[in-house]
Image 1 (tube, rainbow, N blue to C red):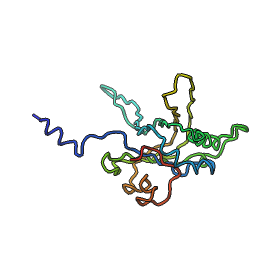
Image 2: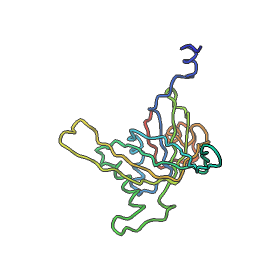
Image 3: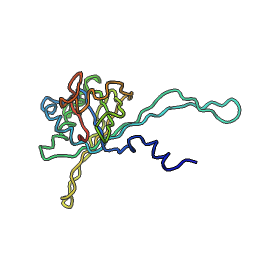
Image 4: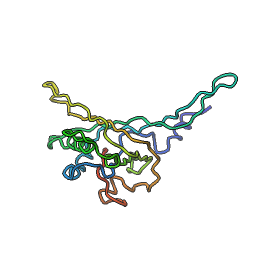
Length: 204
């Protein structure tokens, strides 16, 4: 029979606390001004989802109970939430600019797909030293929905937040170096092959 000591020994380093993460937007298609503000946007991501993966299946019946045969992967849209600052609400402007690049609000002309998307890394970090525990890359990401903002007299002590839902084609496990392309690399304390457009998450 297992003991509490045996159970605790399985948590090498302790249980994972889900408050250390970073999200790296690689060359998001925004205006030059919004790209300059991207580092300020980076610190305002208050929550992020590590998206899942589903396997679609077809039912097969020859004899006896049905057998489900998996045949492809499907991916669900993912959501991030950003705190808004009084610095001209640059977080809102960043995603407005991205959507404007995709579809012009006046002419309703749409950009080419390749000019509308970027890749995004989601890195899960250690509580103790910010080392990378797990990393995925979302491919061909674009902001499908930039949520509405509600304002009211009785919300004086409640910070405003912006919810953004992103569509993407698929995600893959990121097999790059443990800190490459991360917040540490972008700040000059690590190595990276290029500087990301924006990094969002909760820095240490």
